[in-house]
Length: 251
Length: 212
Image (tube, rainbow over all chains, first blue to last red; front, side, top):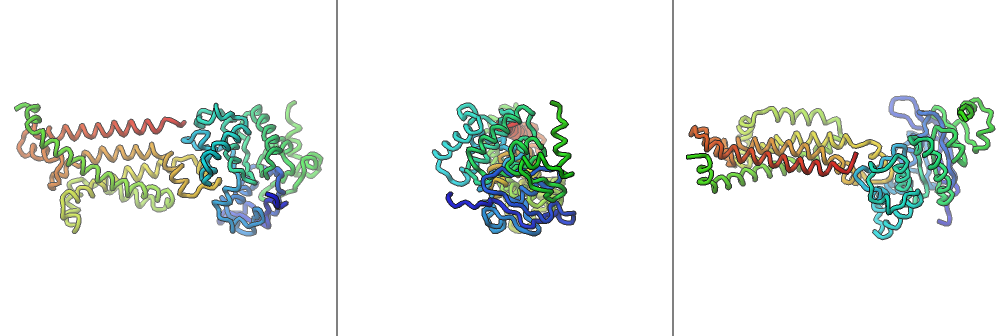
């Protein structure tokens, strides 16, 4: 694409509430630049996941609008919208009855790609996430380790070359060593792909490692948006506890 | 006359009645599946209806089969032919396990898998056919297995209203107080039920294998 918009995703005064209860998100404004890794940081229940689900329209806003590539999510055909957005979550959600290959080929196949092109793409993305397809293509999810499953989930999310990738604590359930490994690989992968990434996490170290910008969420609102550098030098009382949480770590 | 001699002598009639029996069973199962699967899926999408539908089905289960045949007899088109009536009555009995297991099976699919499937852009229809139904299949098959065994058993009662099947021998034998005649109906019916159970059970295990 030559004329990509500078802004991939934009939230304009978005409000989301479950009927009858308090708002989960209120008056949310944010804009994500094309190609950046935008991390949504905050405690559980601060509205990060809800924000992601509003983008691929698993949820719809009560007020305001969300623009994806300049168009309101509500004016997109939801299926088309979702197929142009990769989605990876903590529990991965691989189809247990599909082999790795079939899992990864899911959206290309639904999009009606030719067989040869699908096969080639599957091999390509599996290689990108470090799983040689000779060894892994025909395995079932239950034959993989947690880290491998998460890699397959990532491969599946990027298989149809979506310009945007939503990741909801994708590495949260992994052991620290595997997590570190996969985080570094992901950073390298992102440099290669240039996809716009929205990344939800509650792990400050992860946010600082991966983010171009960090949006700090608290109780359905954005406290502030920082570059990792700004974040580490921030004196805001709401940022301090997060910084303290890294410094407290035993070395 | 020994039982074996009786069977040999009447082998033609036994075969005919066995096929008649099988026909009643297969038709009712086909109808029960055609109605039960969509109904089960419907209940997953509209759980409000669950209590009413499963409750009604439970009530049907409780009606003794002979009474259900009698109950359906005055129904215009149904009562006109005994086999027609039997097939509908048997289908009603087979419905509950199929609806219930379809509902349970689909409800038991990992919600993360469903959310990701939807979030990645599968249409509701694709989610149903590619994810929900395949993953629920072992449970649904369990229901079909129960339904099949019930139907084969209850179908013997159909002879009471002249619908044929292996029940013919059983009722005749009862009337004649002749064990050979009773067994000539009861044993093939029992074998049929055991065989169906084993086959469907094997299929169920086969489909269950490649997952956690």
